[in-house]
Image (cartoon, rainbow, N blue to C red; front, side, top):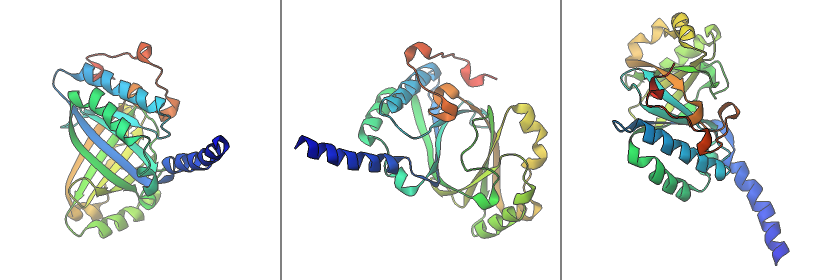
Length: 248
């Protein structure tokens, strides 16, 4: 009987891991607002939660950013990219994940937005998984109703002129539609500012746009998991500061 169970585990476990790590075009981007005066407690709790993911052998990569410039200054963003639809249904230990999240993160934040997006390679320059650069220019474009097809056609026509990593995603669920977001990872603020000419959208899409918002995000390596090989080692390695949201 023991050998039979080992055989079953040998068949089931690889299929579960494969489903969890399945590659595809989907991304999840979520925004949290730390409670006033609780930034340190939130950061400590979030890092403890990432340690849970490591202990659970989570194969997913989790990005963490602080919003540095924009109306949502000091809010926190976590995201994952490059997933298949099946992999989104195959998270590691969802019930335990939620329990740990409620214990360590929820007491210190407001859950603001949670969206699912699909990567658009025909509009982009890059792989669909952003490079772990120090800064990220994040643009949200809300269109007028019925403008999605014309918007994508105009951006596709200009793809060959893109300079630097430029990743476009269409929102599938999680807010007002039609909505698109553009991610442009850059090594620093100077690169963002010097690349302002590439920030502009084609003139042909102006009539299609209801609202555009541009933010600058700062990568938080200690609040990311698996990004650029980052590993959570434990409490002794955590360095927290009440001013860390405004660093750099």
